[in-house]
Image (cartoon, rainbow, N blue to C red; front, side, top):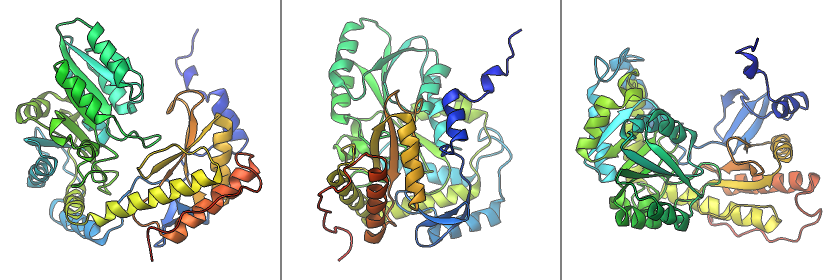
Length: 409
């Protein structure tokens, strides 16, 4: 008889990583230090794997706002928004987010994952959803939870998407679903191309701005604004766990669509609401995002410098402009080895292996924040050079020029 729990045993590659000491996940952080370091396994290492791009999670203003809200409203709301879990803080944040993003309305939910899952209510049997091949797991799950037909197009390939739209003669509703900034390699959606095709084929465009809201664009609203297309996006989701430095998520768009999701988005309707502390922290973060653009300018400058330095070393670095920098290793075992070697050099990074990325596309992701200094960047470069040489990823004596500082005098 087949054991229903048999599937729960570690995969051979996972078991091998555990047995060889290469398993890089679920490492507990015991302390956060003020110089950008964290303590893992009793050792202080430089954090270069956090999505706290604007360095707001430790900002005293967010902590104070959260503490004050907890003092007034408690640690949790013990109910859904629909019933007893709505606070005035929810409504205030929703109004501010809608104004920030230039949308009619917004709905605040408990996580960014939940914000994307709630989109499933829009995916009915009368619809077709065209999705980028590399959308986040939360968006994939939303399409599975919905009942629409799903058509996948090659990553950022607008010509392929156009062919699919032209070949599909259905009279059903059409939606194009993508990320604004893709989480693995940090590359951006071809928003102008997606906007052009959505308009030409009567499709609605939905962007997940989890990683780019707060980071990109003149006003910080995300990848669409970066391309001058913010007003052309029909629906935008975001999370508070990256640039906003706390927990939570939101959906913003036309008022009638948001009201529909408020009543029919089951993952949001049937979940406990976001606690006051997170709401207050998110509002404080939004104020900082709108009034301190130098934070995103700083982290983008740091990313440009580090990407140039790593490329000069000869490491296989994915091109881009964002603070998520991918070292494209390819082989899963080599990726895990590089991650371990970097940790031994005192740098904490993220190993991205299948199924999080396609087979043969394993990578080590470095994530920068506004707190990283020139000295931090030099430390990362030195660690990558040492680890890369040990593993044969770069020549033993590479001739390279480190980019001049763009961060500090």
